[in-house]
Image (cartoon, rainbow, N blue to C red):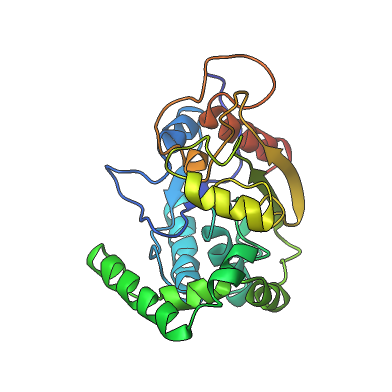
Length: 271
């Protein structure tokens, strides 16, 4: 494997529902592949279901720790799903533009979700109850400050617009985003039902988020596999720990190759 001459270390920021664990890595084979290519990898270690504000505070401290440990002047961030909102909030609220060279978001709900808009038309007491039950689960799993109720509302299109207005991009940081798309609602066994719902309400998606809702700043395009499967929200972080296909041709056959390409691009820009 060719080495990638990346100037700054990479901070990988996970999404909702999972934590960074040593033996059950959120990102599958991806970090090992990047390290093999010469990249220095760090993890966010934020709550899996903390509010965007509490996770931003944690990530701001984490950035300082990484800079001290690595001796680097700045870092690159790769964030998946809600993790992209967490780091955007951290940059804005804690003035991290001079410390973070780039932010690459993978399927982050920058514009909220029409599907969540529909779901939150349920009676509020039911939404609060669901949030409390979910919080209890994540508290047991290690979260210090779970707050699913606030996250449910953050994912609405209205609250997303408020968030974007309150957290503009820092001109000192380069931002880019990627969208992903499943081949059909039934191409991933684990995602077929939410994908079908989102497909009906909001169009093509990765099983959770429409391709329109995740486009932000320097949008790099909709990424698909070179098979009928496409790429699901789980595939984006290598949940299956295996390549999609051994076929050659247009599209991604192994998600680790895609991430290597992203990092090569950052290196080419001097990050």
